[in-house]
Image (cartoon, rainbow, N blue to C red):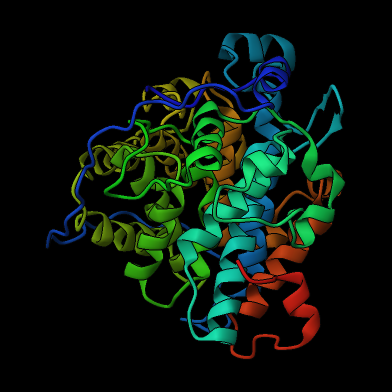
Length: 413
């Protein structure tokens, strides 16, 4: 599959009963490490971290918030030709949040699934602390099944054969706005629907499809906090994507994004982040497309001021490696968070996903205070995103909560 197609409201109304047959399972692709060295790249201009090597809360909140803001910026112009965008919004393209059919500043499935990724990682980590063991892959799978339920699939058909609960749990299930259908990607929807029927999880060696759509990378940023070890962060980020996207270019960009955010929120520069992600990418079979896409972004960033036409030479962003490439290019080609977001969405392709990935990067680079205040004020679910960012910092901080309220908020699995 070339990329992630979006499911319309009509598609979802038909698909909600979960009755269609699943795609054929393909032969597995075995991922093996290789020993290679990262390449050097040019630096950008980060906000200074007060404590190098530790997570800067300003950068971390900036990563999640800017990702959501850019998701909302790009949603109204997703897959629209740049000439049409300019005709409607002016020669500079879209320059701010604009109303859609149900309001302004509306997030898409990109931010929805990022929140469920975050919830999964907190639940798995908290269970590890409480019980001594957990299965982070299964916790993430169940979190995505809860997201599937928010998209109209009855829980008994979404939960999978191992889960016998009558209703889905966790605090995100109490956020009504998360039950909005925002044209979810077909690959995610069908892969999760398949798990609801069979209980088979996608892994690096058990493939569900051959998709390298951008639906894996756009939700992976929370993996940045999983560990102090970049190799572990990369693997967790890639794992979250491999649950639904089985092509290496579908899951390796997710690992790369997680490592880049991991580096940036700890005070690193874009040069540091790119070097760190390359060091991990080269250890995996199938990295060539993602590596080449990053090389193209770095090269293009040195060729003058950014334009939508230049962005278009990197691809449409509908597949994992080009979504990451466009995001990295926008970050490298600008010296301002908000300018980077606008570069990342003003093009012919998958604007909300390229924006979301770019926002995760530049938010982690410049911090939350750099985000345009009027955009933040209009952002849907801002309070929920901020709460999840705070909870991630708490769980993965030096003194994670141990009270009963935390166990209720983040229960087992």
